[in-house]
Length: 326
Image 1 (cartoon, rainbow, N blue to C red):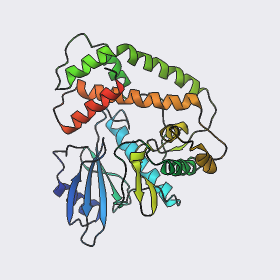
Image 2: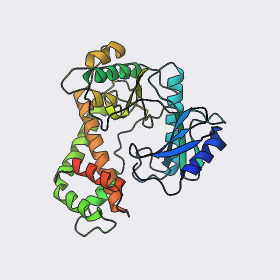
Image 3: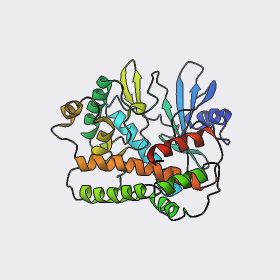
């Protein structure tokens, strides 16, 4: 997130690290990276560095759950699963550091879940597109390893629900009067009104794909959820997958949709680790459509509620216009 949360200062993060993780931070700076979570970089007196993540327990527009309690449970489960995967020797998994009680995630402030990770020196791309074909193949191989892993006990199961779908349907039924909840409310209404047939067709297409994939007996596997290029950290020790908040048991195409395609075929790299299995066209299409609908629903819900002009709002509007034709 580009906008620093008003109720969490760098001093507050320093105090949380000291009290709950027993890490003594000599300096903390806000890191305006990613989208959805807030991040800080903390430095210790003897050069250790930590990457601190905070998520608000607000279910609106959050893909992790429909209530605050479900969001909390999903964050805790994802953190525990990531730690277990890393402990099994999966070096590409960047896992949370436990707090002083052994928890990988905790509500260190009322209404806020915190996760602390090791800060790794490296770089990632600005968006999810693959520019390096060799890296794309390497990540396909890492996913092949992940998909053969025994599911950890804490792993939650993905479902076919589109987050905020009910809110999107309510918005589609409320296009005849102006929206006045903020600077992007009325532009969102007008954009949606012009694309109502497109959105309804996408919803119907998604439901048809769900019926087809649900009828399949293909086994589900451990999936990262968003293994695109921006979630790959290039380090001197190799490629590392970050942002495991969406790790779940799901069809393998949930991950494959992010790495297959383009100008090269990386399926052989995946199959070298996962065995002679491949993507099903309907399941791959399902996750492409799911992603677009989840983005549309999330940002429509954001702008139908009170909001203000900010860098995050501007970025949200830009993303919405990518998925809703003008």
